[in-house]
Image (cartoon, rainbow, N blue to C red; front, side):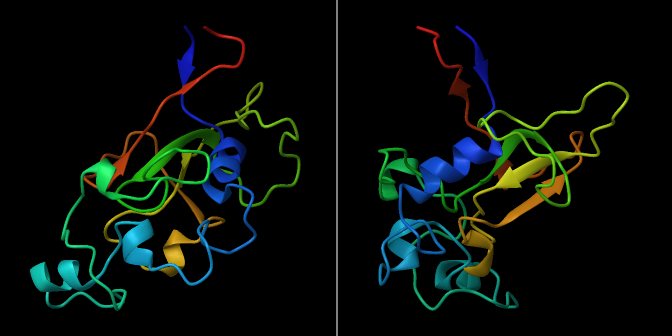
Amino acid sequence: MAFRLPSESEFEYVRRGGLTSPWGWQEGASPCVEANLADRSLEGAFPEWRGAAACDDGYAYTSPVDTLDDGLHGVRGLAGNVSEWMQDCWHDDYSGAPVDGTAWEPGGETECPGRVVRGGDFVSTLRQLRAAHRTWIPTEFRTYHVGFRVALSAGEP
């Protein structure tokens, strides 16, 4: 079996689940039901925190994945809890990006300044949980609120 990190386009496709809302969940849904983000629980643990959502998911830090709602493709925890590494190298925009869903990796002598991180985490504001939000970190960087999930390459058993 060939396991790998998901590409940015795979992540966003699954995260949005066919919806056009900016969050990847139904309009009007409570962010604290759909995701673990910076909220009143986090403010309780860190009173100086600013920008928390006006709801409470009950977790100041990471939550068990089974407490988060399923996405429309049945994948849990795509919004919040921990941000996720993508296979793609960082590019400032999508000019020249692959159009077939594969990861955008360096070619030839091109360097990779860092990998894309998507999904937001338990210290993210609601704005950072938008389905289109993206950032990057150097590949050697480690922190308590960035993790990963693996994908199985197409055609593999």
